[in-house]
Image 1 (tube, one colour):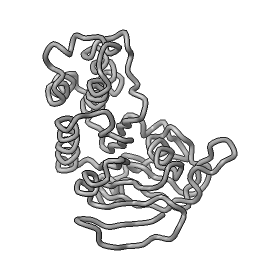
Image 2 (cartoon, rainbow, N blue to C red; image 1 turned 30 degrees about the horizontal axis):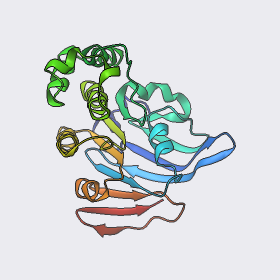
Image 3 (cartoon, rainbow, N blue to C red; image 1 turned 180 degrees about the horizontal axis):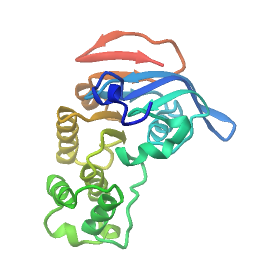
Image 4 (tube, rainbow, N blue to C red; image 1 turned 120 degrees about the horizontal axis):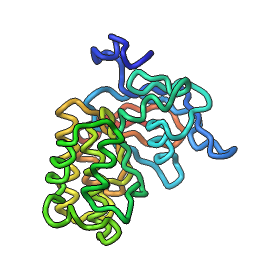
Length: 234
């Protein structure tokens, strides 16, 4: 199914549809047959031990890690046919910042906004929302603190207005104010129609934020109530 399919645009199809999805890192199956459906506007928390495949799953959904077998449809795009086609429609916040140290905050945000073919006005709005619109906008990223760099990465993602947010430890390196800003951005994005999948060691905060919890661990799917959402084991 392609992105212009009217069934997908109507919201009847899940944003993410995986069936028996396998991804290899070398010869190792980092994803060993994952089944997962995520509907539009949902906030989904990924849980699992280190090495369970959370980061690999996020990168695969962003079109950066190939799915070698099974079904993998994201935003109506078959990742096994053309995973590059989905990249400009998703926003991935990874462990690495993806920022250029020699460029200023504003230059970095503007660069990634142009790369996504997004509106440059959204870049300035994103910096304002992340508290980067004052003197920090003209500071080289290499001189920023860990938390300020994380905010800059978030501004780059926010400016792109992605349909699917993929957040790998979005609270890492942030103070309480920064973590609160992240949570507000996630809720606002979901309310505006985006879908968010995140992993975080801030479990109490993330469980409160999530509509659903998906535990990666190679089992069968369980449907249980947990706070405001559902729990699934895949």
